[in-house]
Figure 1 (cartoon, rainbow, N blue to C red):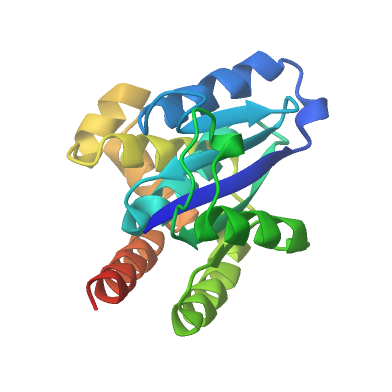
Figure 2: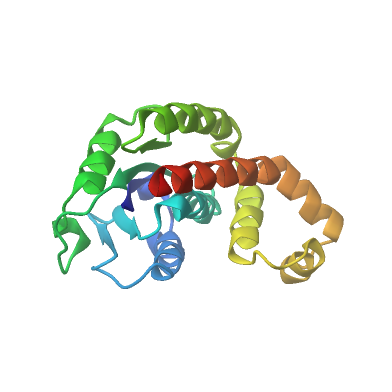
Amino acid sequence: MISVITGDIINSRKAADPGEWLGRLKTTFKTEGPTPKVWEVTRGDSFQIEIAQPENVLLKALHIKATVKRIPGLDVRMAIGIGTKSYDAPKISEANGDAFVRSGRLFDQLKKNTLAISSPWEDVDRVINMCLELALLTVDRWTPNSAEIVALTIENPSKTQLELAHILQISQGRISERQQRAGYDELMKLEAYFKESIQQKNNG
């Protein structure tokens, strides 16, 4: 089992400097492996990335979301597919399998929701997609400050609020406020539940 995220940047043409969001996005992708084997940016504002461990894909999607929304006016739409990989290729755009089909089909169906999942397990999809719809009420309204603190916290999981405060040159209280406003703790509870659900299905 692998997972695949298919996505595109919302309002990409409105960005004053496409290099700003593209550079940050590529840095986020590089932690998963090389391009074009593991990830690829196509048509300027579309992308696909493979996450080898499916239980980690939601955290990656939230990280991508936070990375993009650090730039005012931008957002990202993503479809997560979990499944098998039947054909490995030098470029991710040429690879195939259930995970790729699910991700692509779901992406074509995305309308008002900016993040959803399709897996072989209907019960998991039903619960997680309902949770994501609720989570997106907060996530889609992240300010650049909220997105920045989420991205920074995900990138530095072992750092305390005080250490994060040093990085951003603000008080620890402000860090706490921004995490609360972004719904960070609640999102991490959802992420932990997702991880546990996928691991149970995978091992079962």
